[in-house]
Length: 123
Length: 123
Image (cartoon, rainbow over all chains, first blue to last red; front, side, top):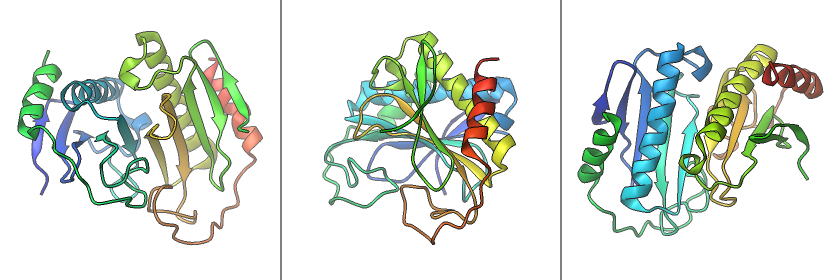
């Protein structure tokens, strides 16, 4: 089961277990597509996506942020936000692509990142 | 070379050559990350993403819309918007995942879709 890192009336954020920093933002209501969301939910969720990206950049200084909304298996709007590094398992391929190497990352503490992220989300 | 389908002061839209309906929305300025964009550009680009999604759903009635922002090879903000179908080459995997079958799609005319999309983008 995924750990819930934060929630408010519009969305909740889960941790994806991975060798990279990776969170998923789910809308509270199980809308199928982003364009199905009521406007307040869509705005809050997309704003959170940018806040999470910004905090990942500030905290982890990654090579690149990757974002994805698929939902082919779970048709409930959720946004993957991932910090990518040159030494990670798949770079420059997407995390859904072919594995390039064994991950060799020495990352700062995820719980500390979460604390900072939640602080920014509640500003 | 990709065909330019539309542009305004904030972004331009290219066609991705694929067996599925797939477009890429690039910011006019080559920002690396979404959070690097000036606010007007980010708002216009994310709004366009939702408009394109909506029009893909209305026109193609896909199983699911997939959206992705990677930029590991091309660190210039661009949003992939894809219409996915049960019979497409990769479903339910992402288009960056393992191919599942030969694509067997009979899709409506892409140029007609573009006409509708541009109409909605300029509303």
